[in-house]
Length: 445
Image (cartoon, rainbow, N blue to C red):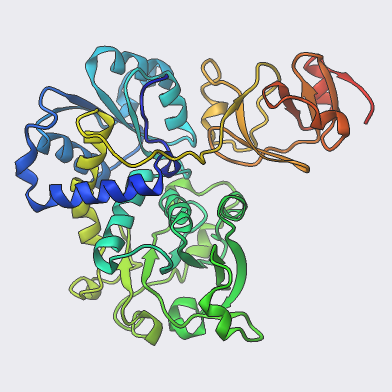
């Protein structure tokens, strides 16, 4: 709804706004008890469709620190959702009088986008499936900024389950926007998804290159590392050899646990044997000597407890710093603090369509479950060749033919006629049969 500001994606904030939020968070963090006047009389609602400890408690702590109140539905399986109530109806009810802001965590990718479309109050995405987790990203960026005093041009290792971790995906997008350089060291079989790599390349110019990470020791021993950099040329080009760019310095290592709750059919559970574990020995190589070791928590065995007292261990600080960061976010979205920085003017515009089937290939996208309330929409990354992504979960759409919602004709995706269709009149089809069954008529290919 217009006039309301939501935080669904990290791209909802400009880089200048992110830095201003960090300045505010630092002020809040000096004395968390000094701000109880700021949001007095305001109420936030926690709607959590999947388990959470740190995210939910830090949001609720932040709201209480600001002098507001909290209502919680921490286990939505016991709510009216169990009776079949849609997410769209739930946020309408909550926003019409129960609360002034909604913090939503959901199992489906794109759920926060759908909630924002139907809410009369601000919606904050506290994690939607394996899609994004923007406030965790802000907490992570804030920790790096506090510890390293900069974000531009830093070198960060992303390790572990890069396929399913929404925290990794949001963090990668944000780091690339700041011009950081990413070294991806996935557990075998859990590499960064192609749609994430495509977005990093298209929006931030982050080109994937092979990297020689042998100097990282046991961390990279079992993995084929990939280097992503939006900076061209880059300092590591000085060290190019036959195997790729050589890693000689790392500012932070971001470790993730196996995201087994989001593993899909076909993911080999047995392949988790030998999952990387980091401790003093694993962080002893020269490039990691001054690197922060970060983790969004909860952890399993991927960071040994022996490392907890190491000054490079940041994971408990990350959790604690979530409170002042989220205090800043809540204050801004509820209109109690105003950001002076300019908003992000480079966000991709969602284009709505009025006809045609849902082409999203992602089975866990909210567009496949909230059929009564979903608006078929997408973002276009290119017209020649035609490429588009789901407006909810950002997965690239499989397009073979393109229809026009006004003429009801359809054409080959790369034909001259297809390129003339207005973006808001586009309808995507996987094949001719789908187009014809939707009432569209073939024209010249």
